[in-house]
Image 1 (tube, rainbow, N blue to C red):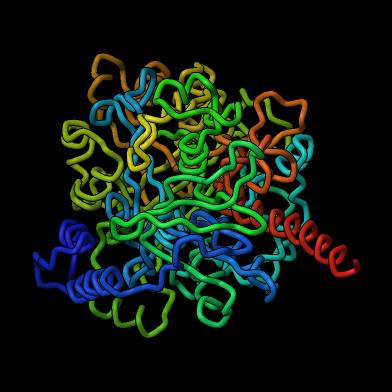
Image 2: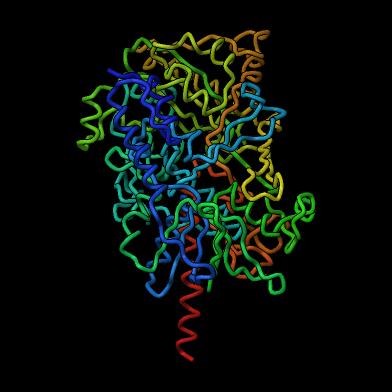
Length: 616
């Protein structure tokens, strides 16, 4: 038998290339194999295009959007496509859903943090919340918890007002028939997680007791409860890389993919303001490549704005402060939204062996997983098993639009012995010791209310002109008091579900430990929860808006409805940085929709140009 908590430190060390095995257990060989795979991948020679090689399209960032876009553009054999990714390839550990938290704070993660927060993250070291951001081919879909949500249909209707229409793009991607609202002919595997803990089953029943309908939250009606739908295939992670790049990487000769290559600048002609390529660094050597048609930023909501500013596109104030000559005045990074959450309430149960992250994993589980079974604990998406979307009594959303999501996880900070999850989230040791450590070796689960529509707005700016310095990122979590009030109602809803007859069959009991900083307040009062919300602030890394889309009349817009950077020719941004308002759900699916839409726009423009030129 093996406890996942016992190999977490070992796995983290192995991921950064240290060939150290701390304990003897069935997973040792898996993590050793992953580390060896990473080292071989790094050392292996990859063809790097000579300086000034010309490609029709250069895509910066092999994440959710970049992988799909590279797939779609390389469908045309006349077009040459270069995809540049700063991270490496996925390995055997990326495939295993249960260890998703282990992938944070590794080389697959940029390991960013917020600036010290004034109104949130009080329970984190230096008041800094972690900001996970994928650094691998597949981007954040290579390290996330794989939850697939489209958001609400009204979100898409609102985005049309900003000039971008994503209708009819969702079903094109999927290849799993979960309901009449899904498709089975696309490349992206979306499925229900086959393994379900006893706790999750009772949680879904409890939510129904509380008045929530059983729904397909990616279907017509979102309000209700469901087991999680995930981007997995037969219990293995189905990242953007696995779905859209691996099947074609070596068969399409017009597609070239390079890893471990960090783009440091977009080359823009200062006279014509035309983007004509990028500069990137591979093995400490700088290279330059040129684009015949377009350069496309798909580096994500944290890196795309950083690259624009490093290239002279941004506000005069931001660029002047770090000594970068300005080429185009645009409000890059002036808007940043992220969905803040509260880590808890936490509940104990009378079950045995149902808490997943710290639950025992047997050699039999491992053997069955590699034999193709999707029903082992290893295929659980890090313990996140069920989602409830609801509209609280103080919500201002339309009656069919939720304002709170409750993510139920059969895990907690103590289920791994206070190791990887605490470290990944940046929680202080005293928070763990005083509020959660007594839960070690006890079955429990965590409910995480997610604020779907935060009013608090943040921003992002350059720390300095060094392209390898992380940007300064201030989400301004909980600056607006109403965000706290909505989360408070979400906490009450989670407790209401836990107190239903179905949940009492497993004796779901609220864990009553005041978190440090809130000891002076009576537990479970509104004032206590308001305090706890600011201490146990947490996030699901759903960053949007830093290069937001909008009509020409919108002074806050960075890109046009065609996703073209305003004032710069032949440069587009295709990722979640363009999304103008938060969706009612997670954002991985939205990034794919943006890329699908962009591919259509690009094809229409350049295929039309081709027909015109051929006809001359």
